Length: 465
Image 1 (tube, rainbow, N blue to C red):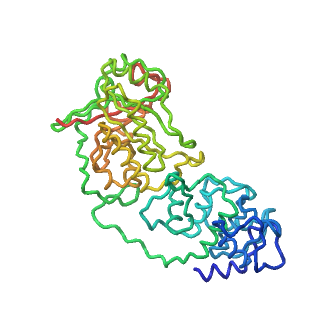
Image 2: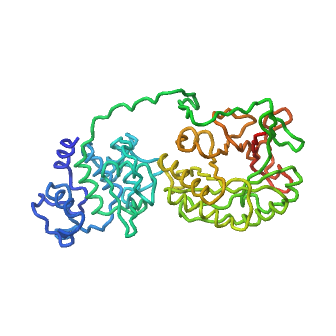
Image 3: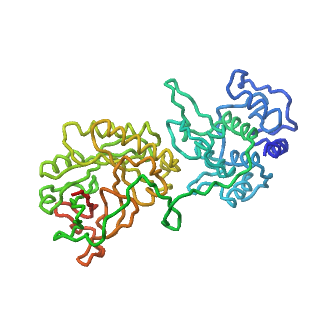
């Protein structure tokens, strides 16, 4: 790998340059690159090899931005691909076509070839081109849990920016500078990847889900709920009663349900409510209270409805997850809740460019654990919410054996493998009919639960006898 990259470096056009000299100089004469600069060795080597040049004969402009086209060319050449001719009216069009054919571009990347590119986007491309995966366990960055950033940290391509308080930042949304891309390309040259070995096949018992193997976590108890003990009560709500379990029926609500008449909800036979306490913005990262939370918790408690809360997490680090847990517990001061504080992490559409995009599954699991442990330390009961896909394929369930599960699976019966304490079986668009099958609610204005306008999530809490 190293020999191939070096020969390509020596042959490539000076991709960082806006001024291409007839021949590469032996000694730099840039007035804005000092020997004390952290990037000096990188620029010096690449300049001497003829890989980069200055913006002018005497300036390098280390803090200048790098375009998508420039970055794409440098990465592809550095990783063993040949020079590409101009295409579609742009000098970098051939590199774009090459990257597209090989699947090197993230699906949601909407950059023009002359647009600045940020550090996260650079990382996404490099990981796809190198076709590498994680090798380490360390989770260094406090501002991202992006799998691509962590992979390149493992390989020493991105090392992060330390802060005065000891944190390490990746700065995913910052446009990459000419100095930074010089370091990245220099490190790619130094990279000597070992031959890929096939990953060992996991061993142990497994079952199939969605065409994939799911290896069983022996420490987690199995789901023993029996289909024959589910019934529909007079209010059209699913219930459960067996020799081992009874149940309570509940809803979960947020600002999307608007103002709720909790007296009517109680009269409809609802025993408990899980209220959205707040959320972290998928783009901003800021924590926000649900604007109806205090109105909901007061109304529910005043009508003898038991209450729990959930926080819609977009944490990208365990530190942020702990912060979310403390945010919940601070908001609950003065209120008595008997149901859990729930960690609810859900993916956002990548077209919205969420800060949690490509969050490493290991980080996601550590966020759940950090949230739950903080909640437990505060004297509350934690819980983790997810659908079967996320429980099976994203969370490491070996790390979640100490916490109850709230399962989201919209069906009249679920064959989810593991035990769960609560089940969100409907989002209100379907109701369980008298024959035990789902009946679609065609009218969005239909009242599912008296006192709540429109659709609302329906839940069962299984209680051991």
